[in-house]
Image 1 (cartoon, rainbow, N blue to C red):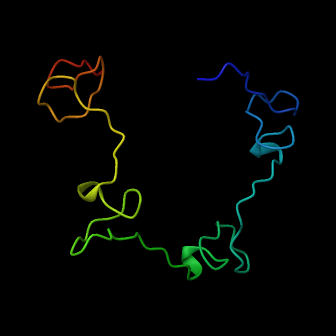
Image 2: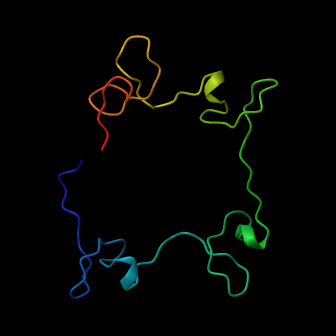
Length: 113
């Protein structure tokens, strides 16, 4: 958490956060994402200047370990082959569940509303 105050849009009566040039998206802030080059299309360009609808291909990478068909998480490998996973585990000894609240998982007493 930052101590910086988030700036509000300079348009009269607008309380949205500033995105660019002192204004929010609603009041004309420009975003740097490239637009699809197909006529009349307003989607974001993914690959080759076009969106997926107009022919851009996008595939998830496969783990580089021999014989593995899992998707890459980080560093070219899956979790099984060494990619680190930032989910914190329950503090109860031997438990491999993800911690929820108070350092423990739901099974060990975390109250999740």
